[in-house]
Length: 90
Image 1 (cartoon, rainbow, N blue to C red):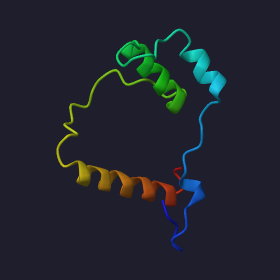
Image 2 (cartoon, rainbow, N blue to C red):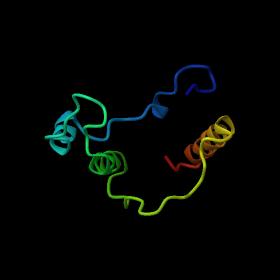
Image 3 (cartoon, one colour):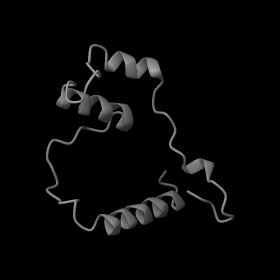
């Protein structure tokens, strides 16, 4: 994301949540040699924990069809994210 001067806003660049050793330990034994060889549910939980920390893993789906109007959904998401950042939410 760019700042008001058109330069890259370094604060908006995501930071690594864990080092490589953490990810390696959590995915040890998973077969990444070809698609669909990784246990999907377990891998999804690892990704969630790695990115979301202690936030509970969702147990129900929202049911939203995110395939429709993607450009508009992304635009609204980005606006909400920027608003939260301005309010000190990030």
